[in-house]
Image (cartoon, rainbow, N blue to C red; front, side):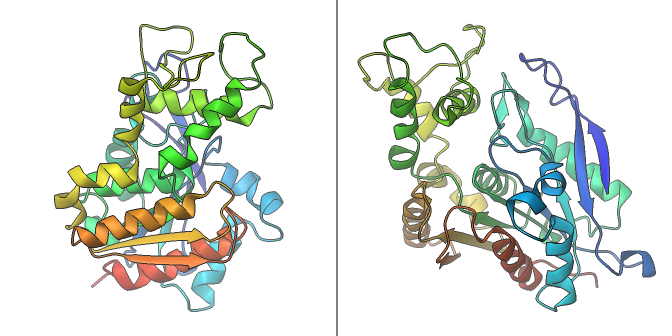
Length: 322
């Protein structure tokens, strides 16, 4: 089903994006036939997605199954126990909120962990405790799962990262230079239609290095133009969000989680498998229990299988109804 939720955490963003957002909620096959309560999986979309993209675009982008069929199949085949799946909206004017709090985009972390979770627990038969909630997502949504899960173990008891943004030095910095290469000596002036690197540059800057004193885009870019020199203090703000860096200050909360799953394709065209490998190595060295899985796909080529694998994994990690 698709419902809507309005949040003061998203109001007053400088772009004028609506504070009322769609919320897609999947109810398992047996939901209407009993009165039991269910664990909940929060599924976060990627860059430039919307909550309704799971419904409107999923069949087109991922062959012959829509998201409801993917979730149904995992349960009916016995791979997954029954669970409620919640798909919130993390879109912003420049692409995606990355599910973080920003004075430019709005406070999307607070939106999810305070407003969406409480709304779902009030209106559906969830098991309303952290040990029965998991958060996952793909790409920017995988990053969002990391950000929300590693900072809010009182809300989410486990997290699964599917091809999550990580190792920004390798994966993110090139996007900025590729965007600059398209400018032909003109100063950067916002995203360019059909030029993905420019949208990634400005979209991520609105999350990681927002600046309310710099209209009309309200961001600081971490590379100077045209010389291409790194702006160290701005780049450091980006790196503070990178999972391979940010884990250092979240160890206490990470160790509270019931489970952490890192899942990525070995042919990821954004090279995110390297970030996953580094994160796994560093978590292991810090004594943080987790699982790391690699498959043979690209960034999103096996998405519905990986969602089902995450459901199967959550089934063994999240607490069920007593």
